Length: 183
Ligand SMILES: CC(C)(COP(=O)(O)OP(=O)(O)OC[C@H]1O[C@@H](n2cnc3c(N)ncnc32)[C@H](O)[C@@H]1OP(=O)(O)O)[C@@H](O)C(=O)NCCC(=O)NCCS
Image 1 (cartoon, rainbow, N blue to C red):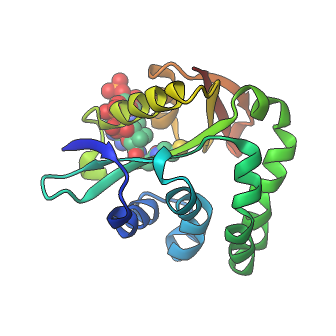
Image 2 (image 1 turned 90 degrees about the vertical axis):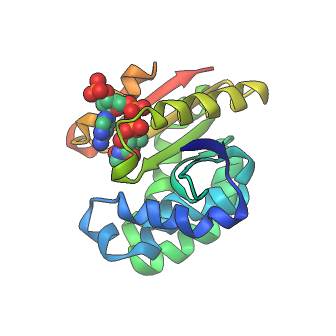
């Protein structure tokens, strides 16, 4: 297994990782919806900010995807959210509402990330390596902080982020948590 920069050939594997690691029934039932929300914008518009963990055949089995600046993301993600709203209206407006609700946090932590690894690659340290690779990359670009949202019941991921030095910024109970790290 190797951590490397995302390449265009990884897109379909990343979409599969995004779909296969989703747990909410509406995402399990719609690969298009979950990928519009959590994958496609990042790999299409900010490929330089994405890293993968690749298996021995160089197939991506996990990723960390990142938008480095909230304002650029808000603008660039619009067409993806428009498509998402045709499938699920609430999901397609949620990132817009979050950007407004978390305006202060977005200033201090302008970047945000999504990280997922297929089950067979989990618990082997690859997630922590992906976090480090992204942090070094963002630091070199002068980005001040990175944040992420996670499900309220995903206790394994809470532990993972805390172990990797992220601070709990918002705890909305079963609605989810926001973690952040200054760089
Ligand atoms: C969360 C995730 C990215 C962590 O990456 P990882 O490579 O499994 O994690 P690492 O091996 O670097 O670190 C292990 C730590 O992560 C946590 N962890 C979270 N999910 C885990 C899993 N499925 N298996 C093992 N450890 C997991 C544990 O705290 C573990 O520490 P511990 O050994 O003290 O219990 C990965 O497990 C994953 O993709 N899970 C499913 C999808 C998901 O929850 N994504 C995050 C959504 S916000």
